[in-house]
Image (tube, rainbow, N blue to C red; front, side, top):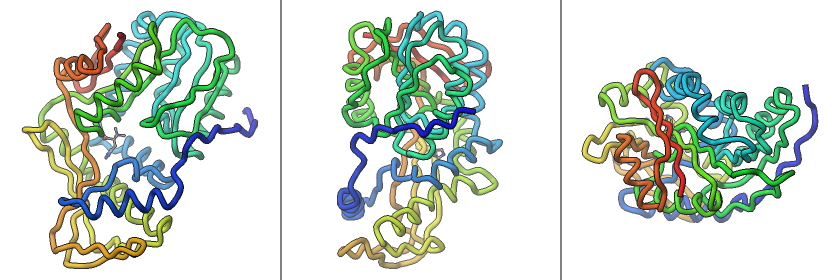
Length: 321
Ligand code: AVJ
């Protein structure tokens, strides 16, 4: 086991007063909404890992099945001597499958805000791929990245964005993010991206309402985080998780619903909630392969290859200029 203490590059982690401003702005909005990246403190990252193991949450299992079925073809599409930059790498469990098939990858750059998850994932991967240069970047992938200088010139830079995290962004934001990625990958680079596909709404809704209540705990953890980091006084027992599939919009919409009329202190601000008031905390957009190709087109990207898992639940697309 590699015990090197990875020197994480901390790009631009948000200072606490910026966090407070973001939260206050969200609570002043009508309807109230908070950004979904707030889920991923250390506990939130662990709860997300637990979500991935719930029987209803098909996304992770299907994406893994897809990689198991198509990793060779994906590696052929990407070509040799790739520098792989992973957006929101988390525990990077899927990355292993991909790295095992890539031919002579030059460097792996996981980009992740949760510092501890980043450190652990790199340590685990370094044990299995001793010759691969690990260059972890502790940063927010929605901001311009200062990518480290690769150990040797890669044939191409491929941005890996698995897990359907792109689904957390509304169409306009998703296009803006894809455009930013298009710049970072360079002329001959590409983006390998996972998207959750449209399917039976009941199956989608079940995935975000697991019977064990792990997703509900994950959603409520956002409030615990705000209490801890900003000194707010959210009463977690006074809110509940609600996730519904909006068929028109093709997305899961997750809310924290106030169980009663109440007020909460957020810095110097007092946020008032009516009974049953719903605060939006996450979108998880679902696409058909054609929908997603059209979205990518708006960012100046074309689908070079597309794969789906054997059950047709989840898609992976390789996008190029
Ligand atoms: C990590 C963003 C892909 O939207 O499915 C899981 C997060 N939220 N259950 C998703 C999540 C509730 C997940 N992504």
